[in-house]
Structures are given as C-alpha cells and as structure tokens.
Image (cartoon, rainbow, N blue to C red; front, side):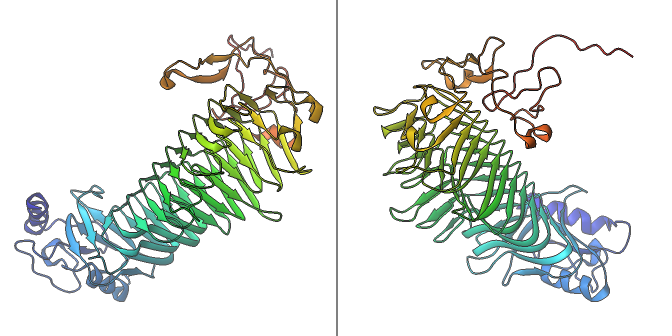
Length: 462
C-alpha cells in the first residue's frame, strides 16, 4: 500500500496530464490529494471512482484514469455511458494494484453501454457478482475472492483477457454466468458453484466461450452439482478451450452438454483432460445430452461410468475426437453409450483407444449408437461401417509413460491417416492444431483430433 501511495503522490506532484479531456482518480488517503471538480488533472483528482464517473458523464468526457491503490466502495460502480474507465500506473494497465473492494455487500461494476470499456482492475470481496456486463467490454481485470460469482454476462457483453478465480456462489456458474455475450482469452480457475450447474462457467442463450482456460473449478453438492468445469444449456459455443482438472460429485467433471432435442451446442477444438467425477454416473470428461463435440482431445479423465464421455438418448454427434487414456471404475472407460437404441447418435472419425475400465475398457453400450470410420476396439462394424481396430500409432504414448510425454498426433504409418469420412463442412474446418482438415494431396480427412502432416517440401510449377 505504501508503494501505491507513493506512485499516486508522484502523479499529484508532477501534474501528469494525458492528451484530451480526462477525469483522474487517486485513492482517498493519497498524501497531497486535493479533489477539485471536474477532476481534470492528477493535482485535482477525485478520490472516489463514483464521483469521477459522474463528473465525466455530466461533462461529456469519455476517459477516466484511476491511479493504483485500494478503493473501498459503498455501492456498485455503474457505467451506463460511452466511457473508457481504466487503471493507470505510469501509463500502464495495473490490475494487480488497482483494487476495488466491495466490502462483501455490493457488486463491483455494472456495465451496460455498447461503447463502454472497463480496463485493468482487481475486483474482490463483492456480493452476488463481481461484475454485471450486458453491453460493452471488461478487459484485463482480475475478478477474485468474491462472495458470489466473478461475472454475469448477457446480451452483447464481452469479457476478455481476464482472470476469474476463487469465487464462490450457491447458484449456477461459480466463475461466470454467460447468457449470451462472449468470454474470450480468459483464465477461469478455482471457482466453486454449490449445489447447482457449472462450477467454472454456466452458458445459455447462445453464449460463446472462446480461447480460454477453465481449470480446477468445482461443483459441490450431491444432487445438482453438474458440470464441474462448464455447463452448457440449450444453445452455446465452446471453442479452443482448455478444460482441465475440474471436479464434481455427480454427472460430469469436465463439460456438460444439455441441448436436449431442440438445442444447438457445439464444442470444437478443445482439450478436455484430467477431470475427475467422484460420485455416481456422469462422465469424467463430458456428459452429452444433445450437442456436437468435434476436433477435441478427451484424455486422462476419470469417473464411475464413462471415464471420457457419458451419453444419453439425445441428438449427439462426436466427430474427429481423440478419446484416450480415460478410466471408469465401473464401466465404459472411453465412451458410455445410451441405455437404449438412439437413432440420432453418431460417432464419426474418432479414435477411442487405450482407455481403462473393468467392464468395457474403451466402450460400453456401443450397440446403441451408429459408428462411421472410427478407430476403436472391439470392432463396431456390426453397428456401422468403415471402422478399424488397429493401434492408432500415436507419436508418443504408452500406459506407463509420464503424461507430460504423451503426444496423440499420428505417425506416418498410422492406419487412421486418410481413413475418415469427409463432410461438407470440413472444407473450411481445421484440426486441434489449426491445420486444414482436408489436405491438398489426398483430399481425405484423418481420424482423431489431429491431421497428419507429412514431412518434405512442396514445389509449385508455373
């Protein structure tokens, strides 16, 4: 805190100014602070973020710069106008030292303007939500240690480049509740949702979770603690995310898809690993009650039934996934199929191998779904076509290897290369490494989440 005061004092003494009209804020206990409305210099800076925002709105000013330090608030900071509200430490964003403490009674920010940006704060000790975001952008923030979830996002709100960590709520979404809007490039870590769905993230209404890490979150409770990492209801997109080391007692530890019969959920290019379910049923990696899971790695997850994936009778598509090294204590180490014949469940172009369970190491209830061009054992050609049982020949894998040395990409002699079945959408799709699915040589998709890329050089002739 002494450092924060010294930096703020330096700003006051030097009268640092920034081009254009800007409202400035310093902590209330800053030596030499002398607030002077409308707070247009560090020397006359406001000592309340609320006062600064109100002054900026009244004067039509669109920038508020907040010096590093600790700010105790007695009401949420409401940003309803086009405003750039950011932390400021010698010209740099300073989220770790510009701290909003909500006293366990209030939310931190409420942002509802499409042209509003809140940039570079830590919000802690908030009640219900650290931030409510319906329009505009919150970025470079640390939403941590709150007595409620980190963020509630709806409509067109965007949360980007933020940390959402160690929040707790008795409701859906311990870290983030995403009903529409977008979360991108965020780390969502160590959050807890008690007795409800989505320890890390709860998604509905078309929300998008992109390029983010969802790690070590939990759902606690023996009845409704579903989706330790992520729960997606009816409509949503999860793309290019790491879902790792999440836990729950029931249903699934990694990601729960609940599209039912009429929803639209897509999970694409995700790494779903090391998730653990400790109670009955569910799936360690994913529980599928309708939705699409494609181009993803599902590995090292564990559960009771369905170590990798647990499916029920709904419209499910698993396409170009590598499901390997998962375990189930009862049955279905890799995939646990529905309990009755499901005419709209299709597994296509997957590798399901080297999983472990006392009853169905790779598959359980495999006769209840349709199989097209998969690599798994035992054979599933009685329930489809184009399937093989050969060892997939990964670059680096053995059951006794250290997990850090696993590499589930394909070698040149793998029978999974060029033996998938093409789909119209694949002409514009990429694999988990970002490589095109349909190569220019053979024009055939591989099985699994990684396309094999041969060595050598390509020469063009004009």
